[in-house]
Image (tube, rainbow, N blue to C red; front, side, top):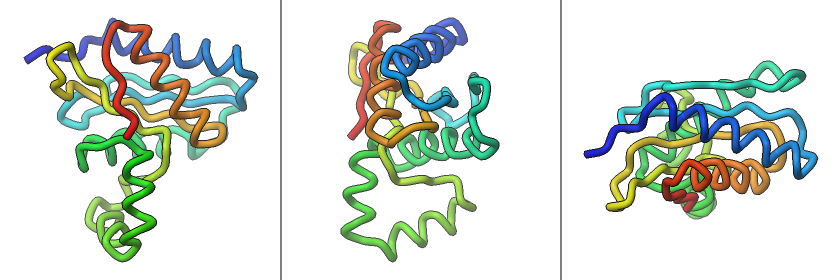
Amino acid sequence: MQVLSLSQASKIMDETLAKARKLGCAPMTVAVLDAGGHLLALKREDHSSIMRPQIAQAKAWGALGMGMGGRALAERAAQAPAFFAALTDISQGRIVPVPGGVLIRNGEGDVIGAVGVSGDHPEEDEMCAAFGIESAGLKADGG
């Protein structure tokens, strides 16, 4: 199976942030995790608030842990809030079920990592993450 490279992670982050600047988003933080949920790379724009790295990582980690993007997680959390409260507890707060956590898939459809973006409205976070992933020649799966 293909492994997500540091070079690909860097391209994803740069393209994600470029899209955010083009859209006029608030300062962003982008985290890229490998398929095992380990932080591969993180960029935090100037003036991005202090909790953004943790939020971005939790968006990506939740997507990986549950096998679906943040948008789908948010929909499920609305339907089963007690279950997601338990997941948050079990994961020691590492899951944030909102848009902005996007799975990275290779050409065969295998999950090779995830991107978490935090800084603006969740929909804009997700849009920028998907753009960054697709700009790196990979497939984005936000939910």
